[in-house]
Length: 325
Ligand SMILES: [Zn+2]
Image 1 (spheres, protein in one colour):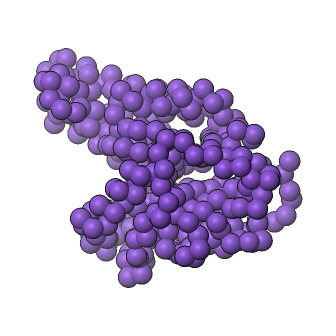
Image 2 (cartoon, protein in one colour; image 1 turned 30 degrees about the horizontal axis):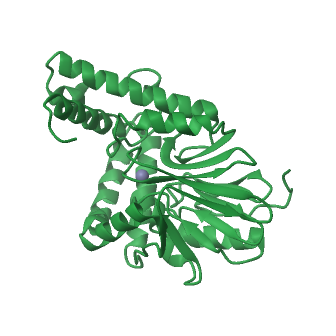
């Protein structure tokens, strides 16, 4: 059952009610969210799943959750360590727990203290200027749309830079964690090697809704640069085994069970291309000139294609040489 109350509005994301008390926050073109997030009212407790790339959109998410449930957020979940899912953590009250797997917390702290996040921030202004210049000269409508997404991202990072304080999770677990509220139950399930070394799916069994983080992209090329191609198809199989009805991806619009199958097909297709190149003895440099095959040439974020293929090529080459993966 869904209620008909008007949903809070943000410049950064649009809210979609998936069930009574369950909302997807989907990046809005021109806004600063970049990734997607979720709000789940368990009854007596509120969960937030991911906090976007910057404090400003995260403030809108926090305020929207409070307006929808009538109380402060209890728990923020970080699906994985990437900046576009956790840099909004700081806007939540110190009474709000930030929850992740042990591995994700370890990686967030390492990226904060070893300079990885700093490196992302350092080039932000130059990236914004260069992307805007490319946008001005781009003729193709698809290319302009894609560049405008990168402009959104660069702009959001530039705005975050002076105020960003990376807040690490204060609660951790491994494998599985269940919440049992008065309205519904929810489960966090950890998968290893799908998108990063640790990714969390938030699963609502009663509604058949899965918040997937970056284990799923819809309508755009996923980022496979951190995946193990031997693990990811099995992880997607495991998600399909839950028989989800509605899936909220890390990027792109809300999807269905078909979206998982499409993502799986994408991984297998690119892995097949990488293996075939190695079999024919083709060098890695060939990837740069390669055309994106159908139907993926119609997906957004085309710039991920070459990076994904390069990652898979190197992975299969190391495997063939008996080197550590
Ligand atoms: Zn990610």
